[in-house]
Image 1: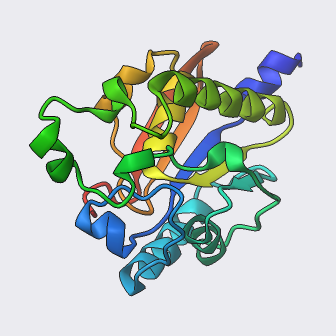
Image 2: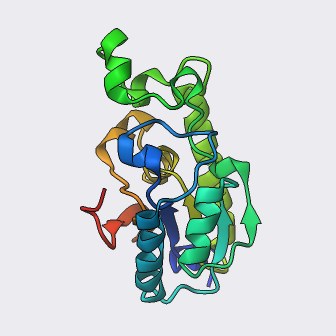
Image 3: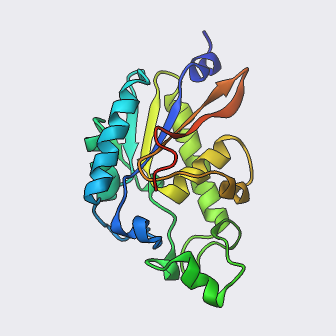
Length: 203
């Protein structure tokens, strides 16, 4: 079996952290290190039960360094092999802690996928970082499944680049708190195999 065939037999699993007070209120949370709510911890445990059903193949688990991501991994029963700033959330710059509704008062047409964030990361920078994350996953997938534990916007960026779409299309994918996306292959083509698993309607 060649390297590409081995890659195609494995999966990239993206796990978003559980609920925090800021994710609940819609405040952009990038570098602010905020803890999970009680409900967020319950979400992570529930997701762990669903992850166990995936029968992952000796997964390489890489987490964002944020405490909310690392704690989510722990509660979900995952053993983190590495913490990497590559999986950090989008740097929101001046919009850290601010809601989209508040931003729209002065920038009514603002969309992170087209505008990026002032004093934070641009769309191009996040797209490049997502490409690096995809490359990292593909390297590991020659021998095992990969789990990225991270954040809403950056996980959506990784999904978008996994399926080889421009980053603006990230607006079409959703990742609720403690939900999972599964990226894989079909006939050699990178595809999104599942999204929102296991509880897509939970906020």
